[in-house]
Length: 480
Image 1 (tube, rainbow, N blue to C red):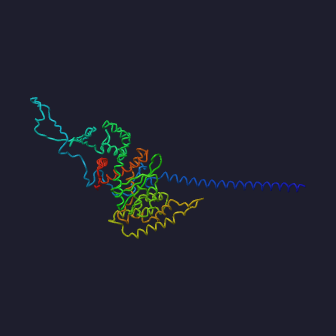
Image 2 (spheres, rainbow, N blue to C red):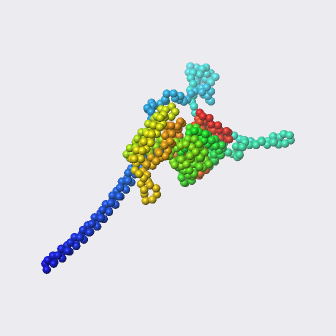
Image 3 (cartoon, rainbow, N blue to C red):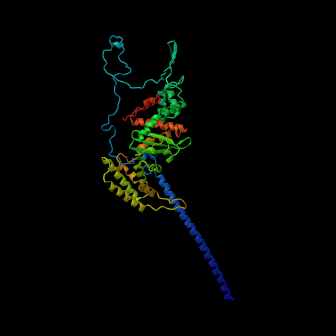
């Protein structure tokens, strides 16, 4: 009886132990699953943390951020030569005030009377001018009013009436000089409309209001239409043209300003789109260009196969720097290769010699990159995702000729700095005015800025040629 009870108790104990084991196994499985989830979350958080740290470390040397975002820490993107001494450099002519032979006004200074006999002197008593000093200043500001009168004459028994000039269409109006000044201040100097109105009031005590400035901008836009076509024609005839684009808000939505520029001409236009639709529009010159186009690696540019492409080396160096900071070995080799080729291209009289050797070295580094970069990772849907390094490698392989053109094609520069300088005015405009209220206003600005930039490249007086444009006089660009 006791043995039976012991067996029964033992069975109950075994059952309890088995139940406990099952519970422990269940708890263990739950803990393992929970641990796996924690590991997954930890890996995800580590990845996000690394990505955020990478974003915080972005600057103009390892990304497309502008140098102005670096603050006081910004440094040159390319190695510079030996430091120069401060002040004027050797060969610099310099410009300073010099006396003129025929001053506008002469004021003579002599003592009023003789200290001996107290005789009062007059200007005719002056015997000799001992010393001259000249003061350069602007004339007292005042509006000059010109009245046009319509007159009649009688001849052969008939009355003959004259006619007003075409530019004088209103009983009271502003002339071309003050309108040219308002256009210059608003567009080239980025002065807000309210400030222009205030300046006109302070200087000339006239009510040159904001709507008058806008009317002047619209007027110069029409006057510059033939000049805009002249600039486009000149750009199309140039062997190497730089292209770039930047975004800005127009009518409360993002629009894009596109530039095509050379050392002598600037063509700027605005469009709702950034890509191919804008580059194929009527205002664009890229669709008709047949020579060498320099730009960054924006994919839309490669849609135009009728021209040859050259890519910005400064952009490439920044991307390589970003990979180097993450430990990429091949990026460091490619960075050194590009800088060495750049230095050789500066020393070469025309182009770098031994092109095939350089190209073999380029392809060898690309092979190292292919081994170092992880293969594409297939997600739940869509195309396999590449790492940033592999994306850059693919672009290096696809556009090898464009990346190396600066060294092996005469006249092709290392960077796209020309276009970036010519479109930087939009960033200044954005900081001052934040946006354009109307699309027409953006068009007016683009055409005027193209004109003034081209004038400055030709060392031509901007103010006088704006007056000439208002007066419908021909504009002829002559290199300075």
